[in-house]
Length: 189
Image (cartoon, rainbow, N blue to C red):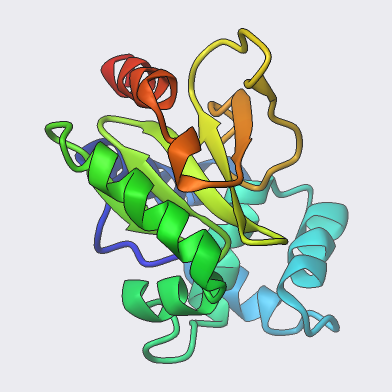
């Protein structure tokens, strides 16, 4: 994940994960990196599972260690490259652009491009979107699920704070309701 475009709260959180690592595990980040490089697995998820299963590390600590042990290829974490790789479908991209235009009207929003989704935060993440097969877009929001259009978000790969989800299939579905839900989620973040 590109750590350049984070909120202050997110930066502090990453620093706290690293600071508590040695205190709570008895190993420095450098020692964990050395150990991670001995991992027999080659895929990122398998490496993280190996650290969790063999050393009891949580997801966040494993991710921090693996990010240091196996840095991403130069440019691979660039937001523009991640965005282009994720939003290949023209119809999904058009939906994202309409959504971004609505979110841009809100103040103090920090957009972040991740490998698997596009996110928006103030102090914390309040919304995320990812393309869905067929030229659609899934929008996750940090609000309570209510009504026919919003459903409970499950295993989406974005923040667990985003408990409501809706699939948008055409630009006209980014309507007053969706904009109101986005504003509600942003105001709570």
